[in-house]
Image 1 (spheres, rainbow, N blue to C red):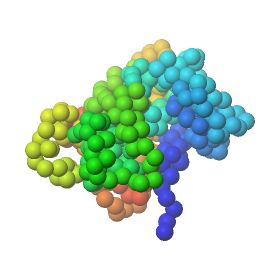
Image 2 (image 1 turned 120 degrees about the vertical axis):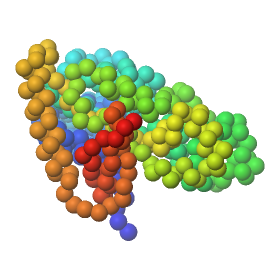
Image 3 (image 1 turned 30 degrees about the horizontal axis):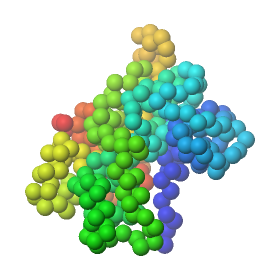
Image 4 (image 1 turned 45 degrees about the horizontal axis):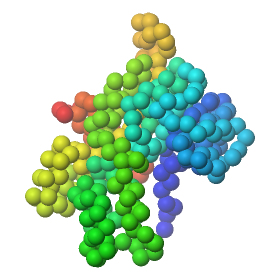
Length: 313
């Protein structure tokens, strides 16, 4: 049996690759929890890594030299402008009540030509949006957080209508968590696209959604599917699992010749990155959707390969 996929390590590696190298750079991890991502960036050679979170135990698991932890909201960071060469945020934005404010703050504290790397997942309207797929199998119980109220879910668990691991002491606590607006912003996937498209002074490489295949909707009965699509706005919302933003901060003030030079440099860097990503072959297919429409993706191991053209939204 092969090694389990390390989701956190993968995205840290991707951020390091995007920024060319982490060595000598100052990094900010937004939503660092106990600090694992902070430690991984230090392992990658970062000069200094800061981590922020609103939890009391922020950074408690990874105290290291050159690591600094602050209890702070991403929506209003008490940090100077342009402090960081890389700002990294993984599986956090979907928990923040005002992602628009948080993303503006991320942009503000990123240094000129610094990298913004923000992955929000799983998104609320996806099958995984309740963050409890380890308890409620998403194939047996798809979109249960959208189809049922919390009280109904508790009753179904009590009566055996929904099965869950017997080792859990109080399933009601897990249901309260996954249905709470305190822990999830419950924003539609299209909001992430719009918010990121409105960021100022950022050259965007990716602002898009990873979608499950359309066939996943067939697990629902026709009438159930129609009700759910009407509830969330469209079928894409139900398929959108992840939003990804990658981009580079441009210099201020944005004089025309400076902006063109910076954008050209970043496009060259992007072409180089894509060329490296295109090596290899085989794999399944996913779709990607961005502000201009659909972009086909090839999944090969843990590498994404983007097609060359967009269709219509």
